[in-house]
Length: 236
Image 1 (spheres, helix red, strand yellow):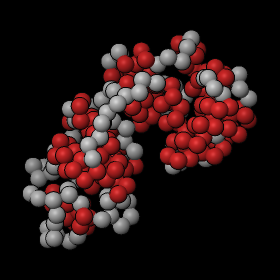
Image 2 (cartoon, rainbow, N blue to C red; image 1 turned 60 degrees about the vertical axis):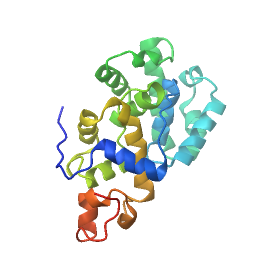
Image 3 (cartoon, rainbow, N blue to C red; image 1 turned 180 degrees about the vertical axis):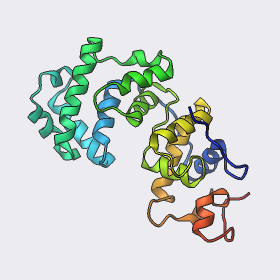
Image 4 (spheres, rainbow, N blue to C red; image 1 turned 30 degrees about the vertical axis):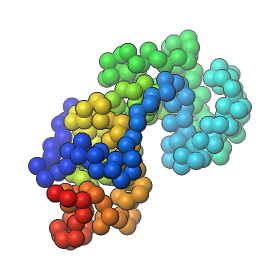
């Protein structure tokens, strides 16, 4: 696994969490224990907003109150149920394939066994399901079972690159591996949530609000973006 390298001037993950928590509040890790729900919801969330994916999930559960219903469901009925979430024609066969594969392997839909597997094995099991990648697997393990797997979405990826925590050439999977290699287990969740909040509020893809950022003084992107170290906020 590649190791992350940082200059001494770069903020540590703990410092990032501390400064962003002062701005956005301290994230509290409360795993909910329902891996199958997290898996389906994360697939629905791909390439759409949280609002739309949430609506699609609620409509899916209304139409199919338990996962067994999806086993025999007509694909067109699944597609209609999740239409509000976008990309329904792509996601509906993926959802069907996932529930069929889980049932085939396990004989039930209880994924709690993942909580006890070595982390790499748990990731590998999830990633071997149809259409499940590194981010989706990490979401299931982190949100459902409190495992230190880091989902790298567009916000986490962008902010980590701008802060110099991962190379600018690193894709999401490499970024996940590098960040997991340096994050203590207890910091994975607050780091993830803090970077998402920051990416949405200040460190936006377009027109980032660098002068308002508490990380600015030790952010390579921010210093370059503003043309130098002047007018920096956030302390040494």
